[in-house]
Amino acid sequence: MNKPKRQHHVIPRLYLKGFVINPGEPFIWVYKRGEGYKSGTGKLTNNPFKDSINSAGSERDYYSNPGQPGREGYETFENELEALEKPANPIWNKIRSGQAISEAEKNDFAAYMIHLSRRVSAGRDLTNAMWPGIAEDYEPPDELYQLKCWPKTPETRLRLKAEVKAITQKPGHAIQMHRGTVLAGPESLMVEALKMMTWHIFKAPAGHALLTGDNPVFYDMGFGLASSFADVSLPLSTDLALVASWWKLTDQQFAEVAPAVVEEINRRTIHSASKHLYFSKSEEWVTALFGKADYKYRPMYSPQSNFKVVELVSAGPNCKPSLKLNVQLPLIPQF
Image (cartoon, rainbow, N blue to C red; front, top):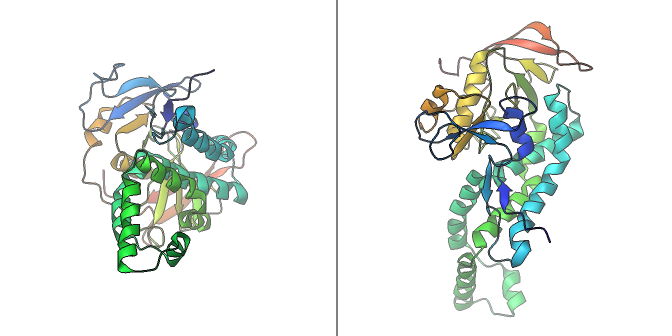
């Protein structure tokens, strides 16, 4: 029998493929948080270090469940994640080739984005940080007393709360909580909000490139998604990023933007990354920013933003032309 899958990709390989050094080759630059610049190939000695996307973004046994026996303990969660990814795979290829996506594809990709935001280590950390408070405040529902055939008394209430607390201390509980959060992603209210937002695919101008990290879906948790100033950004490749907001700028999905917008998206990505960044270039400025905690959220759009259409840009063969925008964003700081 084949050995169980134990090298688990926290960041999908198809996603990282958009940020490789050379198209068609699997190599990418991996940056480590809080370390100085020393470019090379050594994973332990260099920052950034050159790695293959077959191993970059992966962690051994990350989705393994010690509460399950044998092969299932290593593969159940990993296989479920692969099944959730598949509907979005052709959409990735379509967007990266410059083609507009349909409303149905937008809905599928919205679910994928929330799934991606939850499967990463930052998503697990958030789940684990919230659960102790939830368990402490847990109140057994009436149905549970009935199921147990217990009277509803102060004594039975404490007993049920103690049982819930004991469950949280069992091996594998943290991974099960994370698994439940990820698998519930498609039904999340955040998916519904993303579906209703206006999406634009921003293209980086010549000479500028986007990077990504191990927590690539950015939104400000203080604003949430209900605020008119809220937006969600996701780098798609070295030259494309998706930005969803409540502002409708043009009827086109694709638009080339000013360098300041690319710099802002990169700053967001660097700020929200947990441990690693992934880039097609080895640049010292990335290590200088990685680890700083002085980022302040700047909405991508505001009533004062000035968008001006200056020309049409070819999006590729057999694709509709997109708009090139000259964008001035006063809420984004000067770089």
